[in-house]
Length: 588
Ligand code: SF4
Image 1 (cartoon, rainbow, N blue to C red):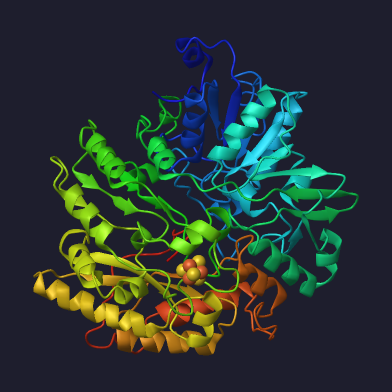
Image 2 (cartoon, rainbow, N blue to C red):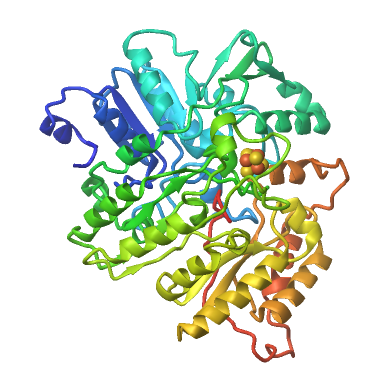
């Protein structure tokens, strides 16, 4: 059953009013990939009455007043992607299309959606019910952050939005605790994963450099970001507070990671894997094509690429579902009336981290002074793809499933580091789970840029490519690797892009089209580099291309066929365009 979006649906459930209304910048598609679908079900399962208003018109009261006022709180999210990322390209042109809007035309999601929706609620309800922000836009803007679209530091979003609370990260546990506190009219201020505004910094909390200080001093902003980044582990993090004027934003330590049984329960809910009929009349939602019959296997990522916000949003700890839960979901999908036999993706932020986590981290928290797989793979992390192999083999045996794609990126350095099962895993992928091409994300070739990205060297890539080709040939399959690359990353000049072009033409033998101009998204180390023009780990000055035209030229340096020169022999030109690929918050 869908979550209600109209009074008629509320009445069908016997509800005269709602406890919680969820407002989102995405259309309402009922899948486990939709934040409101998951959060709504978690609340309903705990006995709350929940409704959804998706993409309300911010210029009228029609949508936002449709369900009345909630008894407990409003939950506001910008959607699956930060609204500014969804609305603008890296060169700041308005995007015409939106994969999460019915009909695909980008005309429903306001800029800074979280703020726009909060204002909308406040305008039409002299609200007694608090407004709670959540989702990636709020989560990554919970502290002072660089905002690429206005080219300045912006204050924590609770100051700008005037909402009451913010729940950051994966918020199921915090949300249930908040709902209970509000129902019982208790203060929610001790809930982990919660942010709020206060007159004082709580005792024992780390006071970050203030908003005014970081505005005036880039080094203070760097200090602030290090403290913020390193206090994000559910076991070791301290609470944080940052002053702006005469108030503080208080960030309680992160919520605990869900137990496997809790994670399994969430994915056992009866998601309809469809667009809600109320919104269906406005046209199809393109995103549904790729996520309708996809299965999330885990959360979190310890890759910690510096341009990616997954570590800040989902955390560095990978929590995996049980094999039984994944197989049950696959069986449910196989019985879906519209299922065509193809599972379009089976993965998490990084596909092959499923079932692989550090025992030390699970008990004592992530190391503060080192990363798990960069610059080399930590020996404490025992990489073994055995569980993934078992999962792939078992899922293929389910009647009605003809094809299972692994489409969310594979860390090839992890495959190469698994001396026990790495090649068997790759063989499985090559023979059964690649649809002609496998996506990998080296992002660059030059060590100076790779180091600033926190990405592995090209040695791993070349070895992986060789193995992939050998195994493909052995399997009698004509298939190739697709490479995701980034132009205009901090530290990358024309010189590095020319070297990248040479590398892809000669060593990878492709003329790549999957090249994306770098977008500095909030609360990443890369956006810190972009803003400060310094390496935050060494303090060295950095070249950063900020001219929009020259950024686009960096991309052209890699992708353009040169006038008067033919494509070198053996070079493959994939038939794919990257024009509409949005910067994911997670790339492998
Ligand atoms: S011991 Fe190694 S794998 Fe474990 S958390 Fe620390 S860096 Fe990561």
